[in-house]
Length: 229
Length: 334
Figure 1 (tube, rainbow over the protein chains, first blue to last red):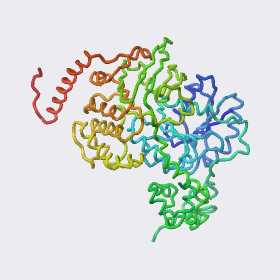
Figure 2: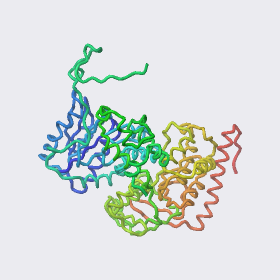
Figure 3: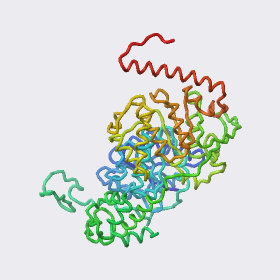
Figure 4: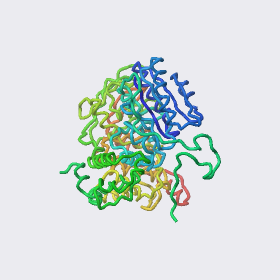
């Protein structure tokens, strides 16, 4: 089975992109399922179900979403294999711009949209930096020139990625994307494979439920800002 | 010519920035703008503490490697597709499976309009051209470039660089002045000649009904002014050899001159339209019906003569519009 990780900021169009890609894959007789990683709530499972796409949703709750992702992805893979999918697609929102779910050798996609501000690609971080393909959505409502500048800014942080423009509503552009999905690596297990980028350390008192403010309550790994005099 | 690796090893950051001004951006991207610039990157990185790198998940050799990659990326004109003289649309089939029986060659400088009812499949045709369909999209069409079949590798390579798109629904969303915007676009295209900015600006003003200045904010431009700027910008600054236009009627710009401008700049221009003025200005028009190419009509001489009356009508409407704008009274036309 092939695994593809799809990440991107909330409302960038990940679900629409995935649904459109799966439509193309279905035409070629391929069977795909989705595992959605989210924090507290998600509405995407309904959209997948409406499109007859098998989906499982996991909520990280009070755990760091990226830690949650990496501790569950192998089990997700087992679910996919058990369901006899040809492809399993993981969808996760890039929540703090510090992390990315991308795994070495696994096709990694980052979805961002043209409306998110022209310098956004330069701020997104590892989720974009380490992606193999950057999918840019909502290009149908901004000018050609802005699309070009946006692409230029993606190149600034990821010179190697393929950049594909996709219209999530009409599906334009997803055809070529589906070809990349089809060419992704086949794997049996993720055991011993590696993340492309470290996840942040989270071992302080606030990780374990502390809500009070003040140095007396701050224990573990704390980081302090330095303010100018 | 030194490789980028050698360049980084031997030259100071200042020297590199002098030759590659864009290198400055790299240091902003990795949040290391305070590096001593009179040293080589490797030396400069030694002045930063290990803790910093650990914190931001970077390593020194990774930065060196990324910097070489960055300079390489922006050194080659990888964003440009050149040498496209023609595309050929080889027919597939319509929604009911009837064959299209057509091989239409479109050469650079040519203008083709696409007509047909809403939902008939115009966007699908534009989509086939954009992904250079190879009998693998739902329409079964094949698009040849310079008369030749295109491999998947080449398709991946040209992805997103082949086609510039313009449509009625597109807006400017950047919070910039017209001048800042054009400069930014020129920078991203590595345009060597700064005069292109003025050319774009003047041409856009020429096409637009109402004038705007260099200092006007993009978001304050009217629909017509935006469209005019987009078209001028596509004609002079975009390197994509094919331009797809989806409905620019009612835009309050000189449409006929706008598309002539694109054609003159050696673009292959396709316009999906219901506007008689645009459709008749094209060399040929593709008629779409039931998801397929129903026929291709070469604009006849009689039609070209009618174009003259269409233009007159259009001019009349334009005059009326301007009279309204200027607070004048409208008198019976005829």
